[in-house]
Length: 114
Image 1 (cartoon, rainbow, N blue to C red):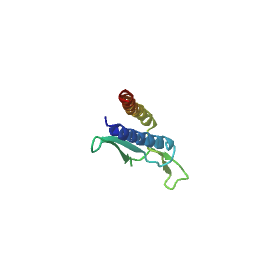
Image 2: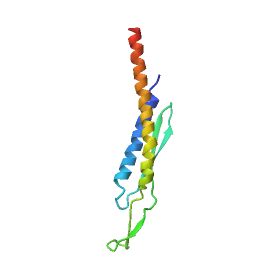
Image 3: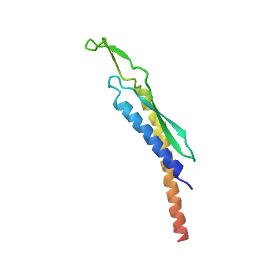
Image 4: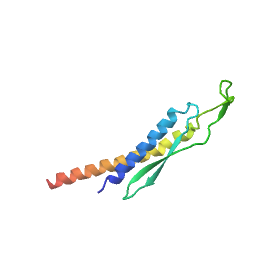
C-alpha cells in the first residue's frame, strides 16, 4: 500500500486549515483580502492545495478620519469560513486514519512473518 496519497492529502488539508485560520484571524482587519483553497488532484495520485486570493472589496463603512470618508472592511465571510472547516477536518481525519491503518497492517504483517 502506498501512503503517499494520504500524506499529500494531509498536507493539502493542513494548508486549507491554515488559510482558514489566517482569514478568521483577520476578520476585523480593515482592507484584508481573504484567500481560499481548492483541493486538486496532482500528478501520480497526489493531492495539492491551490491557494487563491479574493480581491473583491469588503463592506465600506463611513469614517470621517479616512481620506475619502469611507473605510473598507475585511472581505472575510466568517460563517462561510467556519462552515468550510467541518468537511476539511473530516477529510483530514479520514486521511490520517488511512495512514494509521496502513501502519498497523504493516506492523501486523511484520509480526506474522517474524
